[in-house]
Image 1 (tube, one colour):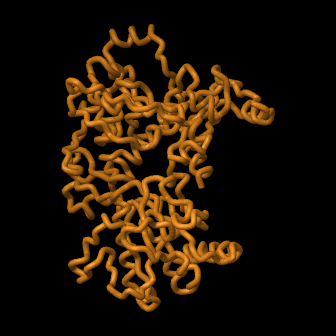
Image 2 (image 1 turned 120 degrees about the vertical axis):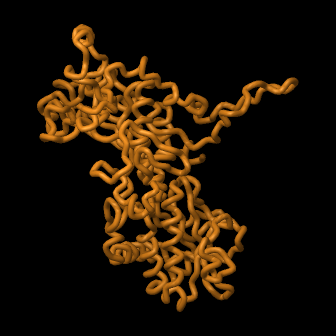
Length: 486
C-alpha cells in the first residue's frame, strides 16, 4: 500500500483508470443489503490517494445482463451451420467477452489481455483451462460450438495428454517448456541462470559482501531459473548463499531469502515442486542447505517421502535454511530488515516478464490525429442480413469505425477481405472510437482531439506527426509502473 502512494506514476494511472486498482476485499453478493435495525451503515473512509476503490462490477455481473435481443444486433449467429466453418471456434471466455462487450461496449486491448491471460476461470496463465463443453474447476463451460473431439481449433494444446481427456484445468503448469506452448532460456540450459549469478556476484562484492541479502523473481514461471541460481550459489559462492539464509523460527517474519512474486496458484505449485526437487539434489544435501516454506504451505509429498516437516526438511538443526516466500504483488516484499530497520540488499530478476503484461494500442488515423484501438465483436456482412436490415444499416453510421480498413494497415488486418484463403474470421475485431480515451491522452500525450501536444518536448510532437497514417504504437503502463517500483 505504501508503494501505491509513493509511485506517482501508478497514482496517475489509477486516477485515469489506465491500470486496475489494488486488490480489495470481495463483496459478498449474496448478503442481504438490508441494514440491521438500530445499527448505522458502515461507510468506508475515503482513500488518501484520492482514488475510489468502488467498482460497480463488485456487485454487478455485466456479462449476466447480456440480452441477445437487445445488445449487439449486428453480431453474426456463430451457431448457424454456415458460420461454424466461417468463423473461428469459440471458447467459454469468448462467450463471456462477447456478452461483456455487448453490455459495456468495446474494451481496450489491455483489458482484453488481462481477461485472456488472468481470468480466474479461463485465463491462459491462471488456469490453462478447458475448451467449450467441458468442465473447468467444477464449472460446466458452454459455447456456440461443440468441441467433444480433438480438432485444430483447440487452444489448450496439451489438454488431452495432461488432463486425462476430461478437460480438468491443469493450473498453468504446462504452458512453458518443451511440452508447452513456448520455451524460455532457463528451460534450455542452466548456463543462463549461472551467468546471471556471476553478474549478481560482481554486484554483491561491490556492495562489500553484506551478511544479509534477498532474491526476488517476478513471474518465476516453472521456477527453473531460480533453482539454477540457487544451485550454483550454494555450490560455488558460499558467502552469497549464506547471506540468503534465515535463522528465525517458522513464525518469524522473513526479511531475507527468496521471494517469488506469482499470482497464479497453478504456477506456484509448479515452482514449489521445482524447489523441492532441488532439495533432493546432492549439492544441497552435501552442503547442508534446505528450504523453509510458509506455514500454510503443506508438502503434498511429505508422507511419500517420509518427512515430518513441510518442504522435505530434515531434522538436522545444523542445516542452513533459505526461506521461500510467495507474494501476489511486489509491494508486499519487505524492503527493510525487521530487526535493524536498515534496507535489505536486494537482487531482482524479471525474465521475459514485461512482454507478457497488457498493452494499450494506438493508431494514427489521419495526418496528425490518433485514436486508441479497441476490441469489439464481429459484425455480420450483407450476405447474412435480411434485405430490410441492409437498407436500414446503410442509413445509419456506426459509432465505431473498423480499425483495419486503411490500406496501410492491411498487414495486420483481421477483416475477411485481407485474410488468407480459407482462413476463418475471428469473432472479435479491432475498432477505432470517435473520441480519445484517457489512456491515449495520458500515455501518448495528445489533446482531446487526438493531436500530439508539446508538453515541453517539441521532439515528441514532431516524431508522432512524422509517422505515416496507419502507424500503430503500443504502450505498457503496467510495465512502466513495475520498472519504477523495482
